[in-house]
Image (cartoon, rainbow, N blue to C red; front, side, top):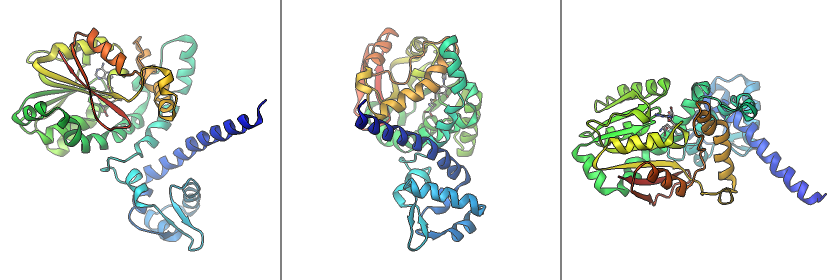
Length: 350
Ligand SMILES: C[S@@+](CC[C@H](N)C(=O)[O-])C[C@H]1O[C@@H](n2cnc3c(N)ncnc32)[C@H](O)[C@@H]1O
């Protein structure tokens, strides 16, 4: 046995284990608002943080110790103070920041609940349906995808299709399929008041969140309906249809893509946003690839297989995405140049 190789592997494995455990404490800090209490405050003593947060001292001590050892919070041993640097606060405390990452601490632990079901399905087939992941998964998805979408969709992503932006400004019909909690639909509704935005999803709880967000925002040009992507209405049809992080999840991607094509009006276009991945395993042998495959095993693939679906998996690359679109009858397929570590953007046309 090569001891050096074993030591290297042990170190790497324990780093992953540490990340998995620390993420649980990050989830507690996120859920309790601790990061927001620390945001913008500079160094604070434990007593000051206890006063602000109302935490039980022993819990606070252990949580701050975890966060300090993990270098999320900076502990100054001489002054005996704790500080959340502004760069870290942008990722953990500021939900309006495009760099916000704390949604992952809600979503990843929710994946762990699927472990028994996925283990069973490995031998027996089937999978864990979306409805079994619970509210933390739904909220975790919304909080992971939402901040970037709200900030970048109309400022960076849609402007790569200038013809569509001018049509959106004039007023067109738009469908966001698999709209989840509605971030993309509501961002478009706000930016393009002359357009009508319809959000479709199969998940009732996500739609409830979308509807209450629309009420809160007073968005009168957005509405949400529980309709499967493979059955969205094609009359009167849509000028723009979008899917954000959806197609790899669905039971029958070809049927959904086919219906999107049928529901597009002449001259309309489809914006498909999917996780960034290469087309082969060999291209995805890095930590982002490991995250995508893990998310896929414990969520994306299994929830499709749960309903007898194809279980595409989250790491389908641009070539397969193009092939699926062509098989669904689309003829135009262009990858848009968006510097985004999580998502690939495709402009697809009939
Ligand atoms: C990963 S979530 C993404 C949600 C949202 N687009 C976002 O970016 O936050 C995938 C969504 O697709 C929805 N979905 C899955 N299959 C669907 C189908 N056949 N028709 C409509 N929505 C579907 C799920 O309910 C879920 O809300």
